Amino acid sequence: MAQVGIFVGTVYGNSLLVAEEAENILNAQGHEVKVFEEDMLDAWQLYRQYYVLVITSTTGKGDLPDSIAPLFHTIRDQSGYQPERRYGLIALGDSSYDNFCGAGRAFDALLQEQGATRIGEMLEIDATEQPEPEVVSCPWVEQWGRLLE
Image (cartoon, rainbow, N blue to C red; front, side, top):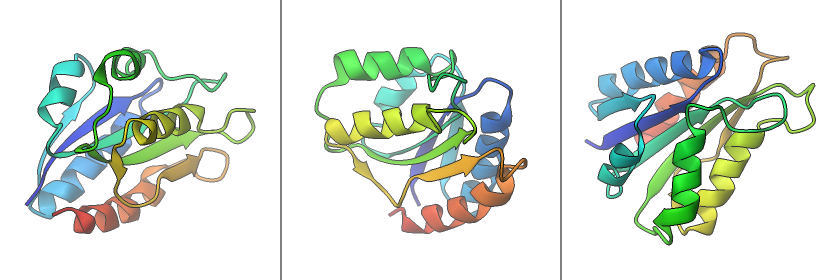
């Protein structure tokens, strides 16, 4: 089965909860999974030939949470073209703000620009419609995990 690194950007802990649920689901499917909340750059490079799942919330102004912003900026400024990268993305946001899921959308756009291949569609979870994001994310992760080689 696949090796998956889950990279988490969180402010209040919802993204981490989603990541922990994703880890359980993917492990149950036989994948080898590790969750990263900090010091992510070295791990990001280790998963270059494997799979990454980015799970990030968005701050009120559409920005990346402090926990994942350094990784995003380093990837943008130093990683360059990475066509071997395969990833999935779960974005948490609140549609009552102007930049709904802005952090997840920015991460997706960056990886697309660098030639990475997204596996499946990006999942956007709206806190105004779904106060328990794992209710939406768990079925998505189950399906995403089946797409991995």
